[in-house]
Length: 97
Image (cartoon, rainbow, N blue to C red; front, side, top):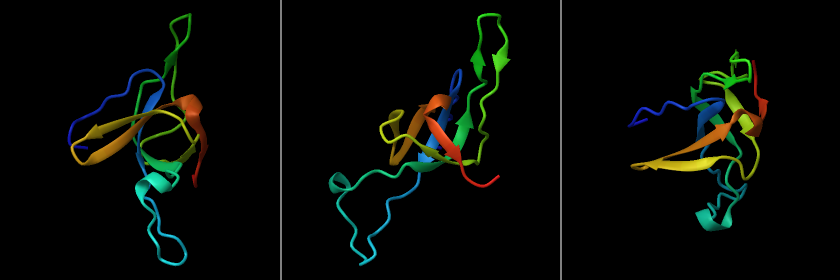
């Protein structure tokens, strides 16, 4: 990341996986293809604070590969790079470990 992003609460910063070509080797225009719903976690907020003041940590960590909801989060562009800021509730699954 060119700028350091520190998410707040139970938010996470994700770098989306790159769009892939079709089996025939055709790369669809960006407007015609569905954006990938997988990505890698780059930054994690401290967690949700409940009404008693206790912090509940986020269930993912930096480096985790995740699956998230189709229209989840907020896109953020920094130069040529594009990131997605999600809440923990938008994460559907963690791959691997």
